[in-house]
Every structure is written in C-alpha cells, then in structure tokens.
Length: 180
Image 1 (cartoon, helix red, strand yellow):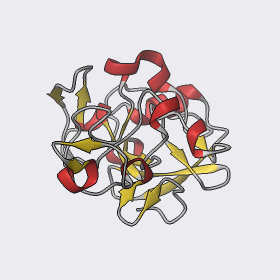
Image 2 (image 1 turned 180 degrees about the vertical axis):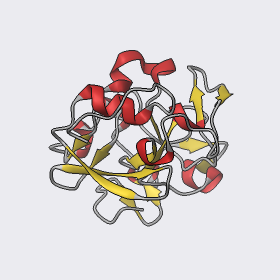
Image 3 (image 1 turned 180 degrees about the horizontal axis):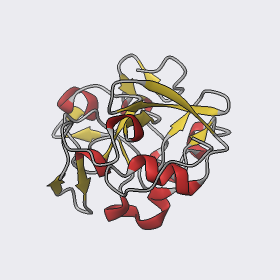
Image 4 (image 1 turned 120 degrees about the horizontal axis):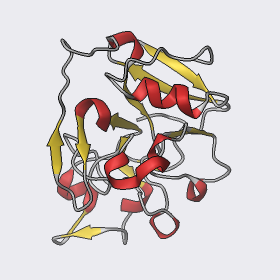
C-alpha cells in the first residue's frame, strides 16, 4: 500500500467499500484479498488477455535480455480507480497477473493495445480521472517503479512513451532514452 494512494482505505480499494462490488455474497476484497497500490508488468510476468485468460511469460529473473536494471517489474497504480468512468479499474490484489479486473497490472497490450504503452499518470487531477490501463501515482510529478534488479526509482512525468515502453519490455534490445 502506498500512503499517498487516495483510492486505498483500510486494506481495500475504495471501490470495495461496503455496498461496493460483491462477488458470491462477499465484498471483492473479502473474497479474494486486499487491495494494492502496485501493478505487475505483464510484459515481464505474463500477458493478460481479454476475458481473463493468462499466458505465461517467456522471461524469468535469469533470462532478461535487456538486463534486470533496465526492466520494470512493478509500478504504482491506484488501488481502486472509479469503475463508472474507468474501463480498466483494478479490483483485487490477485496473487498473479490474470486479468485487468482481477489484478493490477501495467503494459497489457493484449487487452488495451497501444494505450497500454503510454507513460504513467503522475498525480491525476482526481481518482476518477485515473486511467486504469496505465500506472498512476498521487506523488507530484513522478511514479515509483520497482526494477527487476530490486531497485526502486522515481520516473518523471516527462518520460517519453518510447522510453517508458522500452523499460516495460524485457527483451526489445532498445537502449533506454536519456529521459530514463
């Protein structure tokens, strides 16, 4: 949980508050686990597909062609963007990348096409303006990312789409831009 995430409350996304999303008689958070403010990079851990089917990744910690320090593993996301205005709202901290409704993720081009390649949204004007297909953060001007070497860095809102997308790709062979 990120303390600055305005969509996270008492262990659950605000969309799972009493009277919110219900699954088999339970609030989503009760049925599947709590919320999270961090999304997995599906380009690294597996590619989600529309309808919730997961495909395994070709990569693991020992075979990342671009190197562990050049590959994003996780990035900040809002735990519960507003569902009414957001087609890709995250719901649960599912234990693996499965589908956009069941696990926070970034870089899911199988489900969202080129929109998923766009840079993060540092400090959207309000939670309902957050695009769940992207990484977002309440930090002013940056989003925190966890790289596959275990380091954490702040990524500025001035990063280009090309550099961001290269950092999400474990094996594209493209050097990261000077804005990294």
